[in-house]
Image (cartoon, rainbow over all chains, first blue to last red; front, side, top):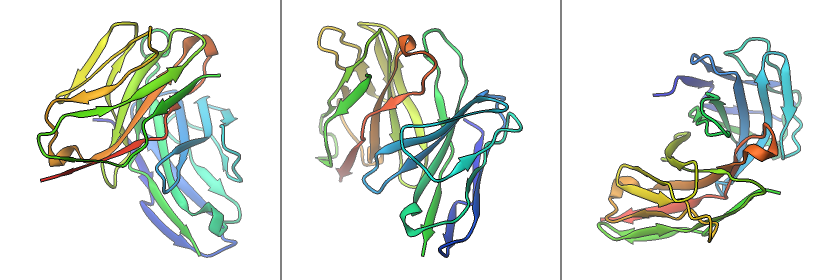
Length: 116
Length: 114
C-alpha cells in the first residue's frame, strides 16, 4: 500500500479565490508529480519535482504553481481560480528503484475541484 | 517523441468474457511498459509491468507481453468480473529520454455487467 495523501478530496469554490491543494507522502520518495485529469479520463502532467527545491512544468500549460520545500510535501496553488480549472487533480510520487526508469508511480486518491 | 496509443473505450463486457485492451507505443529507446488501473473514485495503481522485450507482466489474472517486433503491450484477462470495471491506462518509461516522467495513454474504460 502506498502512503500518499491528498486534501481536500472535494472542493467547491468561487471564481477568483486562491486555493492550495495539498499532497503528502510518507515513503521518502524524491520524485513527485501533479496531473490534471479531464472528464474524458486523459491524464495531463502539469508539474513535477525530482527533489527538494526542484520543480518543473509538465506537458500541459497550467496557471498553477508548486513548491517543494520538504521531501514529503508538494502543494499545488492556484492564485485565482476560474471555472476552466474545474477538474480532478492527482498527485503521485515514485520510488526511483530499478534500472532504466522501471520505477513505479504511486498515486493519491485525487482532489475533485469545482470552480463556480 | 515517445507516445502510447491505446484502444478507445468504453468497452462493455459480460461477466466471464475474455478481455483484450490494445496498446501500442513509439519510443526512441528500449522502454519499460506499464498498465495502471483506476477504480471509481480512486487514484491510479500499478497493475503490472514489463521491463524488456518478451517479458510478461501478470497480476490479478491480467497479463501483458512486451512485444518489441510489434511495439505492443496488449492487456488480457481470460474471465472478467464485475469488480474489474475501471479505467485502464497503458504507459511507458524510456530511459534514453533522460529523467522524464511516464508517458500515459488516454485510458480505456471497462464496464463489466453481471
